[in-house]
Length: 115
Image (cartoon, rainbow, N blue to C red; front, side, top):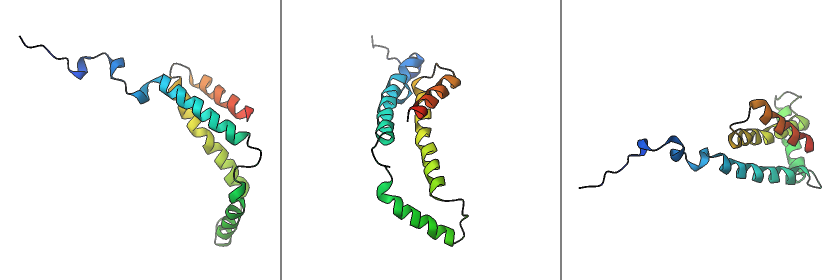
């Protein structure tokens, strides 16, 4: 008699999770991203120092050609800081899916305060 094979949809749902859906994988990604944030945050000089002059001159060019004056270097720097933490927030949510949203937000606030 032939052996009956199991179809993939007969497996329990946790067996069908891909590696990217497993919190331990995301916890490893979280640790790696925290290390990158620590390197960026505690670097002895600003990490954008090599391109700061180029960025300022390009922003001045854009302002001379119609961009509003409030689009300046400080806006770009502050926006970059916000964008830097978006992947952290997503990673924390995937690494700790059983936590409430405010617990994950508190973690992000704590990390941001440390830097």
